[in-house]
Image (cartoon, rainbow, N blue to C red):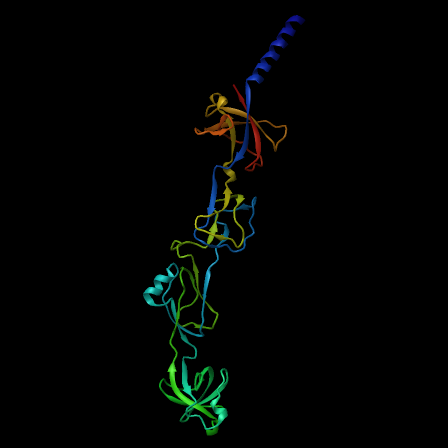
Length: 346
């Protein structure tokens, strides 16, 4: 009886040894087959952002925003016309209308004056840019400021008073306009309207409308890269929930159209990717159940179903390895990049 038990034990051990000898292993790691590559829709500069590898993101959450090129008012006045709309090509609008917008100067009139008819006093023949002069035409009075001087000629921007184009207005240094303070006279002229333009770009935002009052430095338009699509958004978002698995840019970076900014993995569709030697490939078929371990779960063994065997291998040294995809266990916290080992029974 004892002899028979010994023989049975020996046979079982021999079977187990043979089974182990016929088993092979393959290195594996968890991958996210549904990984979204987030790219720049057009060239530009990225505004500061706080995202980094490992951060969770939600569908439609803005990850990056491209900066714009601002167009500011260079003249105080009233916007008389706006020709550009969001999505327009700035150079095309300028070529057609001559400008993106037109501003009528706040102080639209000036006097093109000279000292030729100034009171005969040496001081009256020296005009200084920035000084205030008092204006007179018959009983109409006003004020102005000298904006430029060239020899006997100078320009006075009219600040107050009721004067018309081509009026000849006398200029005085004293508010009571005594004749001995007259420093010259000249004709009233109208400043040309200010044509608002930009070198190139697509209109991303319009901040004014006809009739708006603007000051120097007010924001009129924002532009983005001229090569952008007409309705391209400056905001770059993820299309689905996931985790950032790689961050390929930085705040303030200059990016080009199509440049990879980051990758976002969908964690709901993770798979185990096994690197199977070509010599072991015939022992596996789609639908088979394989056992494996994961380094993150020491001492546990899992089973999964083979869902796909890639037909193109990767050469390493003297062997070719094929990617075999296997299902993962439910109820575990799994992340892309986790390592494991798959057992293949021959």
